[in-house]
Amino acid sequence: MKNIVFISDFFEKHLSGGAEIYDSVLIQELEKKTKVAMFQSHEFGIKHVDFYLSHDYNFVITNFVNLSQEVIKRLQAVGERYIIIEHDHKYLKNRNPSVFKGFKAPPQFIINKTFYSSAKKVFCQSEKHRSVIHQNLNINNLVSLSCSLWSKEQLELIRASITEKNDRAYVMNDKNPIKGVEKSIKICESKGIPYDVINKLPHKEFIEKLAKYDKFVFFPKTLETFSRVILEARMLGCK
Image 1 (cartoon, rainbow, N blue to C red):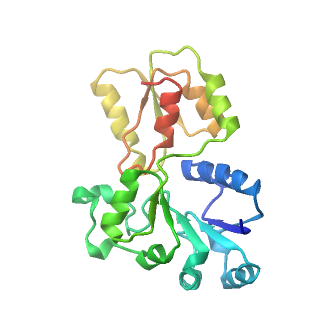
Image 2: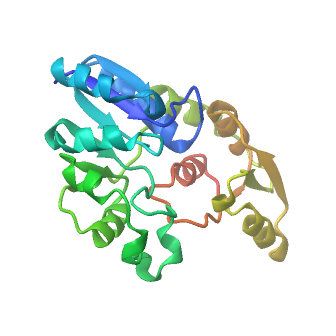
């Protein structure tokens, strides 16, 4: 395996979201087999591309909103040297296919198509994710991973956290409007379900807290590519 440059907008030390946790597990596994250089996308320039190309590195790119167009064009020219691990919907201006009938966006909403089509492979989180990207971009280098990633330690934490439950629902208080907190609250209130709205926590604390709840209520406003949080809730025995 060639050495790898891993590029993302944020890593787990900057932001503890599902994509960042996933990437952290992947990086740990890659580091067992090869050398990995990590860069936030905003700090990765043309000089870095040329340096690592000349030193026989390949590139793994996840979130790339802050990657410069100059770098994107340079990478497109060496498409066999990079893959994209797509966590959401960066092929759309609004990053949300849910607002379009059948998840198919009008042509004017499509962005970054050449960057996706030039990559050796674009890895999608689920078969649904793959099919939605395909119908919007009509490219043939898409691969469905059909899974997420947890480290051995994270899985052991989930197993160790399973405990007796209260009779309440857990609503995750996320400032990102696409997480649908307001609808989750309305659903609980309309059905008479006791609930707690809990601010975002570091992953370990979140797992330990969620394990105590009977239910998890979550109504995202965009198409989930592979909802780690739902899988974790189910692993913990939440309804």
